[in-house]
Length: 341
Ligand code: PHE
Image (cartoon, rainbow, N blue to C red; front, side):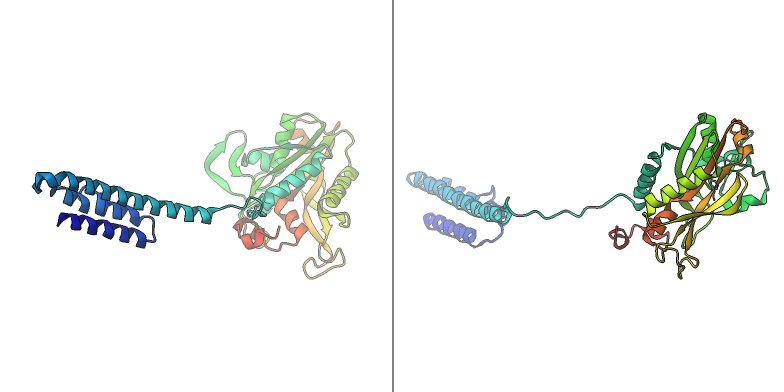
């Protein structure tokens, strides 16, 4: 009777093991037949009830059955393992799949490119605070409080942040605030390149509330406009390409005298005039000869030294190089745009 039960149980277990097609079911089968409250254990509990001469035989039969089932389980497991290995098999000689590769932010790339160009001319990169005092951004640059020239710089003021000597706390609206700081730190000859974030209350296709400027400042004996123009030309050809031309146009800034705006020939029409640029030129920013009063404010004798300065937008030159029309594209992180570079 019990012998038949054991044989049936063995066949049942083997049958189930052969049928499964998922490795994790093996554990369920093991529990069902070999577990503590599994079917085989139930039968083991019957042994004490048997006649003494039968007990040993049945005991052996149960042990053998257990081994058979374990063997079958092991073999099934091995089969799954081999199948899995087959899937994971790796042909080390096959050509690889190239992982997608990104690049630095376009503005970071532009900053590096601009720095390298000016480093070649002996300019030294400087960094000055973005949270700045009124003195460095305005007052010391010949723009007294309430001077209408300040309007252009749509400035963010910081509440309850004031210094007795240097005035109100602001977010610097241009990198020209680095001019006086550079003069305080170094004596001429000065060749500064100050690249920093600037802030203005503005937002449209060509303006963002946070943007970058790069500012050049050169102070030495006998510096004149031809040095400024030569530097502008060199930058234009290096950054935009040998076919692009630059020009300076009279303008007004309180901290340079004379002052100029700098234009570069348009990328699209190369100076002929088109829909985007109107007259063939695109403006990249301001420049001029450092005002004697600014030199004096920086502790430099304007009778001995002269200098030139320029301040241009990083995003602006970048956009003009590639023909990008909306500055916001640079800050949105849209891969469809970024992958084009
Ligand atoms: N700081 C000026 C601006 O933001 C540009 C400039 C820099 C002009 C240096 C003259 C000299 O528009």
